[in-house]
Image (cartoon, rainbow, N blue to C red; front, side):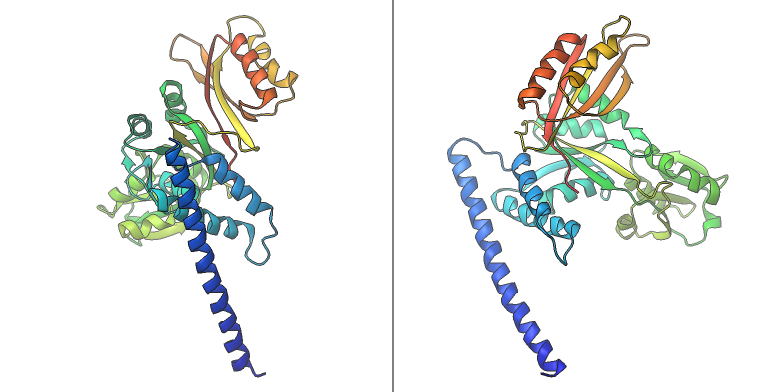
Length: 360
């Protein structure tokens, strides 16, 4: 068989597979719609079930991905799940605006493209939109691998009625964007304060003496730069096309593994997925060894604490809150016992959420 005939046969086989895929995808959407009808009849109108979606993705991740690769396979299945969910209803996920922020990119990574992303002017407004029902969920940054915790989110978690029901790890690749290709014309660089911190060394080495100004988001910086060629912005590459900007430099973050962790917040708690994380905030009583005593239940019950961060309590001088993440769900027997002991030991205690761990 010559090459032309072989190509023809291969293309015919691809067409057959495509036909099968379309049929299977339509069947999957129909089954998802049936699930929705059963839930609605039972008075359970919630479309997004984070624990169920996490279980599906974890199972797919465990399969041998073959030639397609694990990351690509997960991306495909997230979009399939999104399409099936969207056949029931488009959920609204509030994100920090304007269009093109990393928060919006994180929401799309997690939920797929079949969602609406109402834009908020601030992280605090994302929480308010979720609490008021103007959005079903929100996606907010909570910590960066280079710059640490995001104070606005940590403070908002203390006062909100919303709870954490998911997490997203988003690799951050910053670019220097401007309305000009001539770097010498740039007199000011704008970005979110976290982004400026993540690019600190690169900026000092390559743009010395240029004024750095923090703004509410990197996308806002791009909006401003689009109106003034003396201003550059730090943002993701996709933002350049949105606002008609030139990409002067790619990958300017100081750490090549730069990653931001986002939280999904909502008004409904997530059930256990079997591979979960719990977040709490608490304060220690004012006595020697109080913090050690406070966290003893985690060690005593063999629970892995993955993060602890302190924040001023805003209630008195040198009083602090401790934000703690650990592996497990509050409905797990061991975690439930440890949480009860933590609550007894703490001067202040708040459960922030138990939710599936991020799947790459």
